[in-house]
Image 1 (cartoon, rainbow, N blue to C red):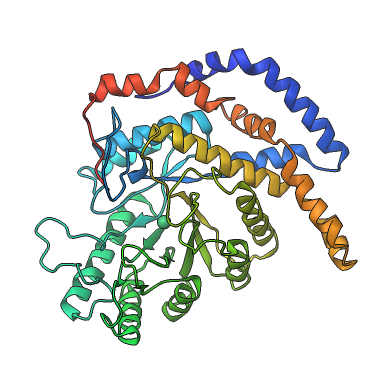
Image 2: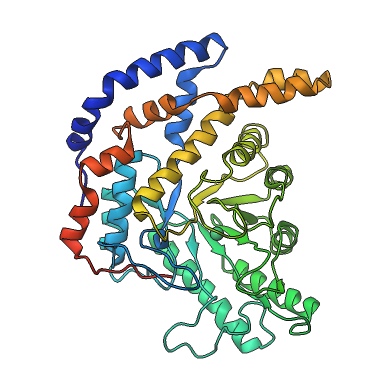
Length: 426
Ligand SMILES: [Mn+2]
């Protein structure tokens, strides 16, 4: 399955006039307000977000998994799906692999396929939250933080294997997320668990290539419900500092307790040059893994405000790894990912429209009302023509969901792969 450029051009024809009218109107307005519209569009077209290999099939809940037809069942098919997303949106130019679900059989073939689709390999993810077939030690009670040194060694060796696999594909980062924790008080000794985790991470870090980052993800609860060893940004930050310069914190939007001020966490980490990666999704109650921007788009905008400020003003922070980390139970996974990519671009575009100079002045004058007005003026701008323009100039679709449907992509995938094909993963 591969979308040809002329197929997209054909679909775009129908919307071209209307798009141009909207874009010209908005462009003139923004130019009058002092914005450099071409610059904003250029930034939008450069912003690439990695698609995780596990988001291409239907996810599940604790209760059931309802599969989606025509899911990719091989790594090659997963890359083709990312290729579809990238062809339509031009913002999904990377894939994030999960090991052991995505170990390539033929590295050369996989690398060639990825580059023919204009896709690079972003962070590789290790997995010590479940046991693999024929695995010697079980992760039932822990992995990198387990009280048994044999379990810790196995989990450490797995992470080093993942680095070696990523090296062969040109990846430059390892993401570590641990399920380690306790479901009941008294189950673990907190200080011992944290110490074990720290020393395991240091051993992995020692095997990290010089041009790689290690991304340490945190999460307050689940699958353990009483405590998680790396429960918050502070713990992740502390562990990253203990490991070294190339170890950083990864913020996953769903990994916070309700109402946490995530934008402030972003600012704090960037101030210290320690925000290394970002996982996009949305949530109402917990780690719900819903479509980006579907529940709290204003919070996403405020987060992007801090990201944009940090990227433009703080050279101390490393370049970030961006990824969508979502799961789909009801929607076509590819449609869901297109919606997420769109929401990310929308929040980014709006953040780029905040008049930083005027905001600084208003802050200096303690004009709180004006500060809020400046943010909300940017937020209330309908930026969709800018995003469509960014896609269009790169050969993408003006309206990717519409193009996806008009081109009958899912039906094509079902014809190719069959109705019953299933994606590996959760
Ligand atoms: Mn995540």
